[in-house]
Figure 1 (cartoon, protein in one colour):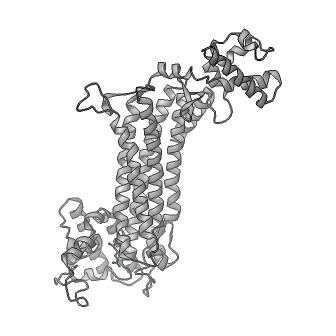
Figure 2 (cartoon, protein in one colour):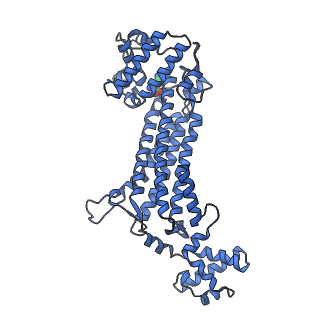
Figure 3 (cartoon, protein in one colour):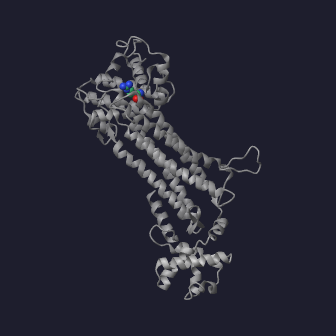
Length: 463
Ligand code: ARG
């Protein structure tokens, strides 16, 4: 267990026997939480500066501690620091080393704090910067999606519901749906920061401290908005962990849905997009194959991020207040989710740059499945003063006729159409034009070319 300079366990006076090695193996978290060293040192520096300001420690001790901490940070950054599993976690590894560097005065650093508030302070600072990194990656994806959308405003494709041809759309409009999803992800991650942005430092083990500390001071120093209100809740609360894991899950679910879509579009049946050789892999037996493995990886990874969310929810279920060792697993869980998502975002960005729409096939597929039927119904309402339901029925009859004659809607003659609605004139034929159809959806948020252009501009200005 953790020992100070005199080679004695931190709690060695009270606890006489060494815990079995197996406990050490399960209980230590240094391999995981060493990732928090910068945050831990920043927290300790703010803490001792506050202790000095409040006249709890002397100027000399404060400076010595800060000197030691900065040296430790350099050692860790330069990979010169020896992490030791015996000292459990990053907090005790650093404290132990501080004793070696500055001697007994290191013993003042832990005045008026506990590892319980220390660890969540580190963790919250880390999540804030992880959030920034994820949002940067998301913004990059949005920018590249906008570029692709700009090039494809007049690329016509079928829009699907139930994976059946539904109505004609622009491929750019489809891509802009992805932009909306990723933009919500950014907002979701950012919104989490409102709740998270409370400084835990100074609540100590669970009840606060009798030292005259200034929590507003460390709050400012560490860039939090305000101190937390209740010391017991502070050391037990991991809602901010769940919020992050949930946001990761939603974002990876978005990626998973898009990946699945691109896999379908890349299949030989649909053949709507081409993937460059950079983002496919081959088969060990079938020489002809080009498989969309990276997309399948993206589709599958949401499984692990959901798993991480559920692991944390399960750890928290039924856990009384306040701190328990159960909580220590939170870091491994978040790091895994974070790293997986960042990888996925980078891979998705690569894919965005490495696929092209198969415009010919998109148009061909759009021209099937009686896709302009709703346009005909709308036309009847607008030009022949009938209700939508009546128009719907007449159009259904037109579709039946086309099916019987083995024709698409645009292959029907006016004479044939007139069998169902005698008042129809030549003018009706324009509703079967795919571009017309796309461009007629001018309602806000619809697929008309103008709407798409405006939306692309809006996002380009924002990013
Ligand atoms: N490594 C511990 C964790 O992550 C730090 C808090 C330890 N507190 C305690 N009372 N044992 O949860």
